[in-house]
Amino acid sequence: MNARRQANKQVPIDMGLRISQAERKTWVSIALVRAGAMFSAPTLMVGAALGIGMALSGAALAVLCGYGFVVLYMSFIAMQASDLGLPTAILTAPSLGKAGARYLVALIVGIVTIGWFGVQTAVCGSSLSFMLNDVFGISLAPQICSVLLGILMLVTAVIGFDGLKWISTIAAPLLMAVCIYGVGYALLSSGSTEVLFGYVAPAQDAIGFIAGVHMAIGLYAFAGCTAGDFARFAPTRKAAVLSTVLGVLPAGFIALMAAAALAIVTGIDDVAVLMNSIGLPLVGLIALVLSAWTVNAGNVYSAGLGFAVMLGQDESGSKLTTLVSGIVGIVLAVVGILDQFQTWLSVLSAIAPAMAGVMIADYWIIRKANPNNFQACEGVSLVGVAALVAGMLCALLTSGTFAVITGLAWLDFSFFIAPVNGLVIAIVVYVMAYKLSGQMSYLGSVCIKTPEQTECER
Image (cartoon, rainbow, N blue to C red; front, side):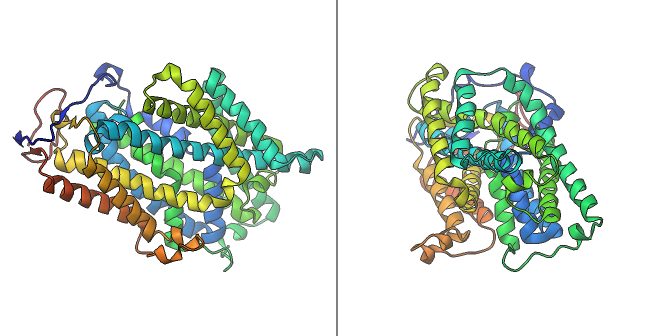
């Protein structure tokens, strides 16, 4: 199977984290976990912005294209994870090297999850501040509310709180019910559906189609890149794809469209004001906070664990790194990360597809999708790092991200759909650099059957 072995010796990866076949789950159970995570504060923000800026039909098309792209690359990563039974951090080792996967991926995951912690904390803090003032006449600054809620979320992540498992089962459905109720409440109040289906976005609020697609991709791009963390429990490639497609697209579409419709019929795209306008402000706030609480506890825990691993510690040593990560997230919420939310989405839509492209190129093109070829060099793979950086830069340069940054507009080369550009460039650069560097080659066609320690069909 191996045509030649070069000096850059590759060795099998430690499979201590492999999920055995006995531990695998049905695609339905995995899909339900994915679907339950689709309703969140950032979802409401993006859905509301798309609704106000694109009207319902435009928002629907942007969401389908954006989420469709994410699900496409997500499916390839999910199948790889199913083949190997390994989490994302290990799946990146062959393409980035063992050290590259340990340090670079941990750093990226840590930064991204801390950023999301800050975003969700800020949304909840702003919503709590608005409701306290509007309903109870209590004036409390959004920053103070963000700090209080952030501390609550952080403490439960550091010391643990079993009740979060129970809260997570009701948070997303409750938030979905509140949004649907809000749409119905607003439509009944207006007495006509014309306000929803006849809406035309004002010129000052209009969002272009490509920009809308970028927002949809950015919202779920990183979750798509880390699909292996859930998909490793899928027993087959088919189950991995089914859990991805049916777990993400329907629920994600409904979540974003509910938020878009709610924003259109109320004329409000500010989530804090939106939750207070639907006739059940307290219930809306509770649903928002519970949803953010469960997701954010996981965000900051993942960040802390990633940094702990990067520093050579095990899970028991992650409490300090989790605490520090949470404090940084709270600071981001206080200093105004929400003001840069669209830029944040642009950055995510650049990073995640590029990382996915490197993983896809290595496993599906170089290693022929054969688990028997799953090996990694001990240090850092310069080929993988170069491809990752090239893909990220391409996506950032063609996304318009630099156009809104003072002094960097000259770096804007907007073209096509930036995340797609980044994914393609990452794949092309990786394959070319890998072959030119003379590393290990693998003969045969792509493996079309998942081996359980058996030979692939070729």
